[in-house]
Image 1: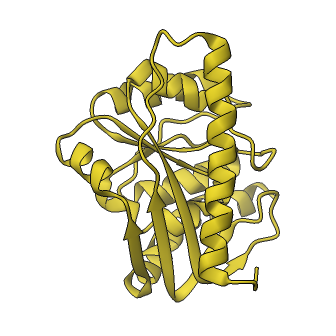
Image 2: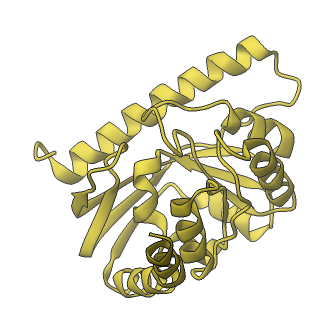
Length: 221
């Protein structure tokens, strides 16, 4: 078992990165409403892009151009994911909501505050799916970065048999990204207002993804 894990830990990151590079060469992208995000990125201003955990694979190739930072859990799977995305130009302060979460959040705050693009998958790493956890609001308040909800949908794609039904674009898929208007969470916002905003963002993210999926896939969900 130990030898098997060692083999996987050694070879999955380089092989996975190579496969993503090849996949990325075949994907076609449609981008909507990204002008404000692009302007902030060009000016090296802090930004946060957020979506559900199951849309990660759609953005691995596309968002590498922004050299983003993302938190990855301390686990065997997390080690392999971190090793893979680092080879694609992403940075990975480690931690999760269950292990090392405070350290990972502080790492994200530090990196985003310096002008980096932070990508936060708000219902990871283990769910429940479709629930924005408090870390997003804390990250936005501490870093001062605006939050961009990002809706992503790909056709054709497959769904993995995982807790979040991870969606993976197939070669030559068309991947559609739609950016929402940025949302700022003031540092001095009262906790009850922060919670109201969190619930509002949760609903907007769910509704926006449902609308985009309907446009991309029609009734064939």
